[in-house]
Figure 1 (cartoon, rainbow, N blue to C red):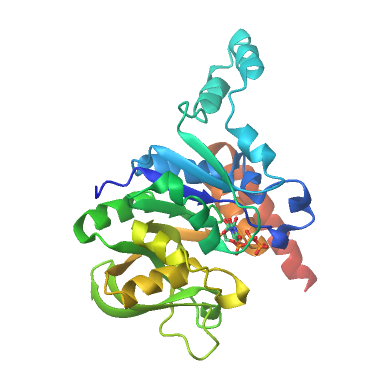
Figure 2 (cartoon, helix red, strand yellow; figure 1 turned 90 degrees about the vertical axis):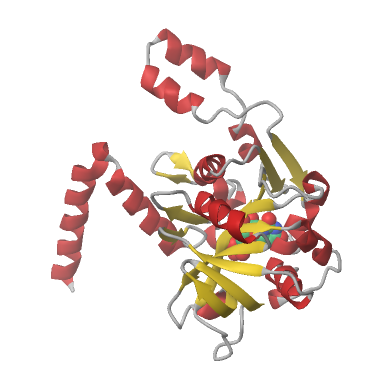
Length: 297
Ligand code: UTP
């Protein structure tokens, strides 16, 4: 088995209920941070980590997501004719190599683990990455690239990990850590959404994974876990039970939970403030409205 990670799965078949009514017709992965859809950030991160094959697990109603990766010849011609080179560069940056993207359908939203299992035939017998577009990570070195570099030393399966506040930890997959070596944690157990008070640590699994094909085999038993869903965390925990190595990786960077409204708004403001052309105006507006809100309290 090769150790090089060249394939990534992007599970985008969830219902996105926390963003209703918007997600009635817009996939949440197409929602924009400033001017780029969330999926574009995930694709760019994957590319930076050396990913060459991009596998989307989609579902009914995600057509606009598939369209996003088509070329837009009329738009390109128009921008060319008007010498709008900068915009043309922006557009060209979204082009994907022919054949680099594959779409697989998850016919029923049975859980993240099931969505990953749906892509099994495209993965074959190779390690693969998983990126959840909801988890946006702003960092100097893109998070998946950090993980690929760490994985070259460890092998096994690896999940991104982050400390979260005690009152939030039971909303996540949580790690039971055996030992630490810098950013790399050797994991002896993992539990999805543990009941409050039973969490093995406050180290939560964040949406970046490098997994071995054994995890796909573990998913074959369709075991239902937390919330009645087929959980990816459980299939990775089975790896530990079967004597294989699983690691957590404490990435460098700031993570935004764009699957929640508060996280999405925070990311929008933070990414807006990073843009030179927006910074001053946005900052002045934020200062003004915060001062007004404070005065009114
Ligand atoms: P979430 O737990 O955020 O669920 O899924 P969701 O449906 O996207 O959103 P809410 O909670 O209803 O608002 C985490 C990731 O797993 C994918 C989602 O698309 C998201 O990227 N997923 C989840 C699937 O692809 N299939 C599933 O059956 C469940």
